[in-house]
Length: 495
Image (cartoon, rainbow, N blue to C red):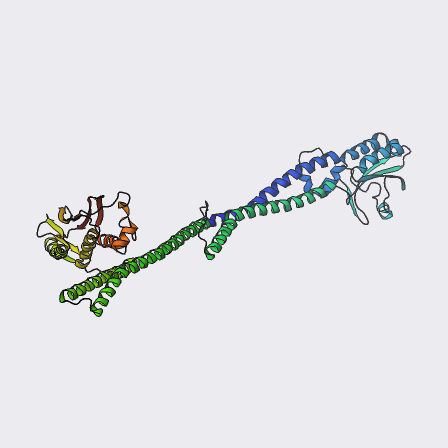
């Protein structure tokens, strides 16, 4: 759920949930309190509209007692002089926050409660009020009361009046309790709603934010070995997932940096080791020349040629180091051009053949491609590929008579170059990794034969940058075949 939707839902909950719950609470309390009022004051009607009219409500409280008193006044006036009867009736009225007063002529013969003098002097005169059970006189003074009056004649002909006095301050305590209960309910409803919203928002927003805060602190401290998990589909969840992607990328970059530093150290170690051998040789032969050990023209020529060859080896190693730096930053300089396959490889083979002949290695060349086939390639970098592969083959030739076969084939949209040797071969375990940087199938042998450990990785990079592919097959003690393909150049016909 989106954050916008959560805010809208929260707004609706804040507005509508308290209203609905308060209405339900009011309805429930009304039912409970009305039942209590009915039981206390004897109101039996199912129509509760009189609750909106307080005077009508107060009048209904004593409706039954008024009827009974009216019947007694009409049918048996003598009972209104009976103290026992009057006490019983007054006890009933006290339960309804009311009391009874009986007046004979101008003398008060019964007062059911200590009433104030001002009230007793304000009692309506004989015949002043409507003789109706729902009518009454409201008196506002020291006491706020509702007086219902019944006029009658005593047996001796005296005028009599019976008053039912209802005290307003003490009436309907259930209504006051209802008001208190409603206020408490409203407070509880608001607290409950706020608590629910707080828990919901805390779970959906604050917890993920705290996770992000902890994750940011971990990254600040350099710790990337943790995870930021979130199943939420809102903006916070998207932020958590983006943060997790950032953490993984940072971790990958950190690991790549560590691996790069490790590779650089390996390269430096390999180059230093490989440079040490030719430098030692150069120093030795140079000292021989200076000390006069080479005392014949033949010896001097041999020493100078050896120094030259060792200098070339060092130059090759430094060139590899320079090229490696360019590969690492994807800045190999390419000068692509259209190349005739037959002409280019004929020149390469002629150049390579002279070098192999001095090393007593037989070279065989087979070209199965038409003379007019062209490719788009960088001649210098492609020559580097061929020289690196053949250089590796020469390095690991272990037979008395070594040979290298070069085959150029046409394979549809590509030309395929195969370079085969009869060297020591590569084990099936090591074959998948020979194009990885600094991988050495046999560290001790490679150290002895020299090499930076990046030759084949450079070859792979160059071939892939030409849009081609390189792979190898090998059998131990028999030899190795290196394959690579490069796409042919094809003219696009003009429509």
